[in-house]
Length: 290
Image (cartoon, rainbow, N blue to C red; front, side, top):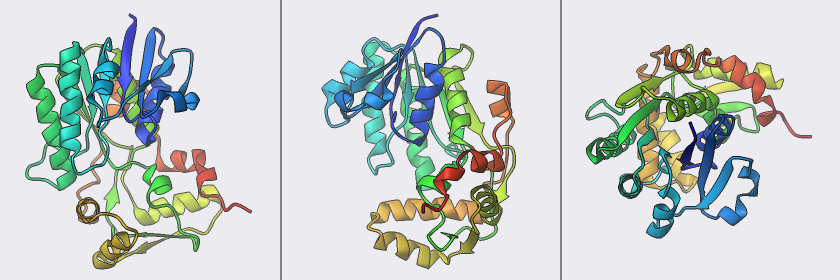
């Protein structure tokens, strides 16, 4: 059945993989939301159409959702993300969108939870109240964060305040595969799926896998929480973001992020990638350039 699907956050870690996964689906037109469609040539494909999208310009939001059957909602990591989410939800409802699939986070349903979870849950509640059919994807921490947010430093060390806590990291491609299935199949309305990798591992174990894949000597250095906060502030991260990240790190350090589920395999037909799989596939990201 032909379908037009709007993907927000289309140039980011998860959104870009969702675009790839949807582009491989027959009968799907993938409408990718970008700040400037004219500058989105790398996203072009036979069934991939960039559209202008800017949360500060409501007319672009209305135009982007017009004629879309389903929406993949990924709000930016911003202090006003709930307000931004509401703009897209309201526009989607007004345009007659049939189904919203929201990228949320594991633990979003825990109250009071951490700030990141509260933001996600607030947006989930707005979707529930909208009357539009929905599915919530609640993934664990991304394996890809070891590339984009805390890669090994030049000295080969990964500096994080995670202690010996283990986390069931998930590959962005597995999240995207689930999203593509949910966006193109029936039977997922009203569901919330907690998505994880196949096993939990400590940061030291992740560092070892990255080292083995990249051929570098990689180690984990456990950083005191105060030093981690100070370091992020010195990198010009806003205080609200530092506080939110430290709460998230605290969940991992306390051992609350190690649970796993079988939903990736149940929803896609293939087992989720292991961290070793991810590290081998992405080894070039950590290989020392000559």
